Length: 312
Ligand SMILES: [Zn+2]
Image (cartoon, rainbow, N blue to C red):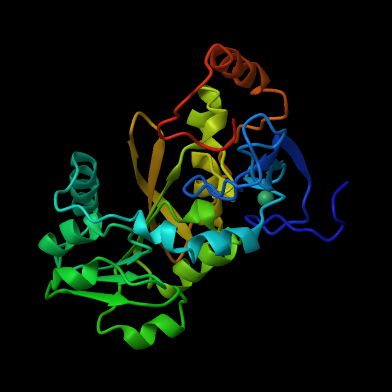
């Protein structure tokens, strides 16, 4: 079944994997729905997309990823106007952002310089700028940061690359942050290695991603959408970062464990612990929950879904 030369995008070993979830005709993105005019209610593929979720779990490192991820379709989404128009700017900081900021504060010193990759609304970045020496953001698109005119911030409009980014910097970076980015990246090992290489020893990393164990625990099949290439359990990320030369230092889980935040520090020597992993091998695991939801929906003729994913 598997391509002989295919490697796992996280552990880089020759891929041996097991399917954990499959759904065809899903939307490329849970943020943008392209309903084609020719399709009408009642047509077979009405309200279905043209991408596939074929989630496999690597038997070596436990990473779960979409083997049918369509990068070209995702690029169309990311460059579409609609996608960025949704990124509205808010003027107040959520309690969650302030809690993350406080957690970071407990692990950093006030002279630390931060770099946040893909800062989205820039809300955490603004909170950090109030407390720390300097904060950089990196994103290929312009960010809300430019309109804030904070003295101790700089937006670098580019992709993150360990080598090229240094030409923009006036400081040594002590802390790299990326929240809800890693799950979108189809070569997560390269990306993580790039970040680790960029830091000096003692440099810290904060990674926040959806917690896949929480998705499995509550059978939330609707949390699997094509936007996300990869899904991580805590020990998968810890084992990977230990392998790349970082020590696990702390965790911050939010929204009832739905968001998993992990802190790491780059060290000269790291003890690799090979923490135990949970493997899923029943590809019908979510079927009963999908059936149950469809049975509920059958009772209604018109349904408005608020905040709906694209995998139902
Ligand atoms: Zn792997």
